[in-house]
Image (tube, rainbow, N blue to C red; front, side, top):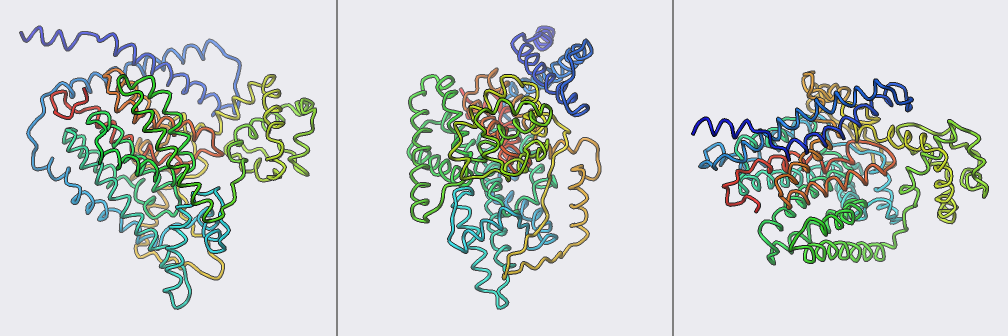
Amino acid sequence: MEQQTVKRRLRIDRRLLCLAIILGLFFSILTVTGGELRTHGEFQAFSWMNAVMLLVWMLVYGAALYLLFSLANLQANRSPKKESLLGRITGNGFLVFLLLLFCWVPVWLAFWPGHFSADSLTQFYSYYNEDHSTHHPLIHTLVLGACLMLGIDLSPEGYATNGLALYCGIQMVVVAGCVAYACWWMKRRGVPVWARLIVTLLFALNPFYAPWTFYSQKDVIFGVLVMVFCLQLVDLWRFGMKPLRLISFVLIAVLMMLFRNNGIYALALLIPFVLWWAKGKRIGMTALLAGCMALYIAVNSLMVNVLDAEKGSNVEILSVPLQQIARTLKVDPDAVAVDTEGVIETLYWDVNPADAYHEMISDPVKWPVDYELLDENIPGLLSLWFRMGAGHLKPYAEAFLIQNQPYLLPYSEMLYHFDFSVNQIEWFPIEQTSFLPQLRAAYETYDQSLRFLNIPGTHLFADAAFYVWLCIAGFGYACYRQKRGLMMALGFLLAIWITCLLGPVAIMRYMLGLFYTVPVLIACLLIPQGSPFEEK
């Protein structure tokens, strides 16, 4: 009997091996092409060395993934154990909430009253002057502006310090509450105690997470709402569409989309895959997601009408085409001959987009554009982009991949990490005070390398591409195990990633949804098969 058990464990799982090799090949392609772009700044002619490195990396990644997937299978095949005292503690949402605040508040005090960047400054002026725009989520503009104005009104000097602290305090409570909910949710769904403990300590002790809680950008709340949305998406598949669960799901989905404009695009990308995966639930799930999108559009439209908000410029969604055209003109100035309609001259009065081109960010190419003329010339621009790209696929691919390398290849340099700056508001100063200056200095040092205590490898816990790779691997394993609830949740995260690939720059805050959600969903893949909450 023991020999049969050993043979069964040593037997090669062909489906799992095939999955590992396919994922290994994908990661190998990213590694070799990304390394070439990192070294040379452009694609070189394909050589036999490239072929060898593709094969080597495929074998390395494939073997590592097969080992990890096999270990996950062993964990999932174990019988559920009786909950220990440590398990009850790590699954207690209130205790986890207190632990998070205990770990995060000192960092907040080191950077008191919080971070206030350029986008937040623009949003405040929009609120203060009642000159609203859909360029930034209206709900976040209202919440941020209201908190700042309350602090200003209550301050004898008219300072905005307390207002910023109020917003950051509220946001910290919201983020800690959502993470505590996730830890409680993992206990209720049968995630092993050791996996829950690792996830809890990751959120509490990894220095990556604390600074975001007092960062005044909309991405933070959007990120934790993505996490809650994904967990409720898993529940819908496992436990059905009961009334209270449906109401909660719709509210979270709409709120999530209201806090970031690309939320609806990610949800739209998910629907075709729901039609493919959700056997027996295709109509219900598709109708539910479409209904969430329709309700979001209705609520957002109502806010736009009430606030008389102006529509944001289309230049944001054209970031990649403008970047690709600029790189093409930089490497081949004669390519301008394709522009027979004079679109470039119309949009750029006195700036050559080739001179403004920056490999890592499209803002220098976007800012000189005449936004009003852009809206009038979008068909012509898209036509030019298509015609120019037909003869310049190489610079188009390079422009896209170099800008998005921090989303594609771990250990790639990112243009920005944290932004510890505090932009001042005219007439309403924000006074900065560090109650723990040594802790502040430690975090500023951490921002330079993202290595915790200078330990090699810890950079990965603040690496966007690493979390993308985890998400892709987790999605593949969920497909292997036929866990369709987790497939949809991980698929939604990949849809967010795709929308970020089309953005103006690769930065961490755009990917916070993955940073918060991936650890939880990976832990869910380890739920024992005998658990009453195991997906069937």
